[in-house]
Image (cartoon, rainbow, N blue to C red; front, side, top):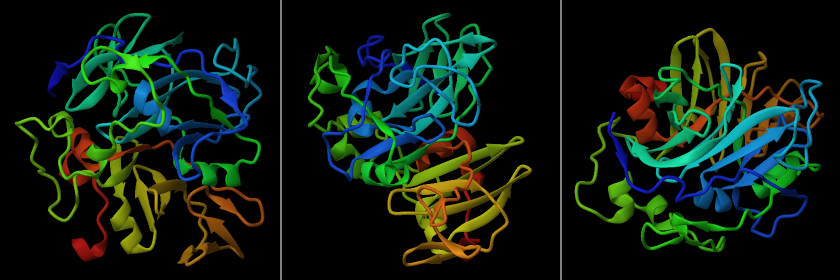
Length: 336
């Protein structure tokens, strides 16, 4: 693993006191990290995350009876979570901030590990690789954060699925991501500092900066390094589901470790759920199963039922390859 410092610590500021709104000023096509288990459900726009990378939040969990204030991140009850985003790796992952009975608050270290965001916790200064959740240096070295279920949706999909949901309000402030050098500058959320990188062929920091020494793709020859992958891990097993391969298969039913998984591809990515045993058929209007139609992006059925979304990592293929190697990708039979 190649760990290097590229920015001063906290030059990209985490959001530590998030506020939420019932309205959103951006486009309905904007992507958000959706936390559907929160009460109310919460959406964190990538438009904001690209300037902040980490949101330290506390949510009420709709699946339990724990307390908490669902209007902001300064609650004294509920579940502490970290909503994390690495623009270089396209990795959106939500973690439990509780580790070894301590609640951690995360910041942006200014370091990269294999081109991935390195977070640090403010309690011990330990450093954590964002795409794996593993502590790579410090008091918790070798330990890993627990992944929470989350999805990458458009604002429109989030609204349709969660009419009572709330959206992160613009945090404001300054960020190095808004600057042409290493000094933070006032954030303009209408800007898109990674747009050119996301559409380019290269990957990693050198590609983003247009510098020499850009990385070469050493993964599957018929997969682009910035293909969106959703990674599911269970019982020591890890499988990454690339969007085009899941789409070509018309959806996937498989087992990861001892967990039965069903995965569907949409325009925006792949969504992985616990397999309920239905016979699913992908159609032009969604997914048909058990006498109703299901939305593959949200797991919601026309009759009100909802599939159980799995804890998963959304990221680019090159980062999944860095973390798990070339054999950890799902491949359709046509590619075997």
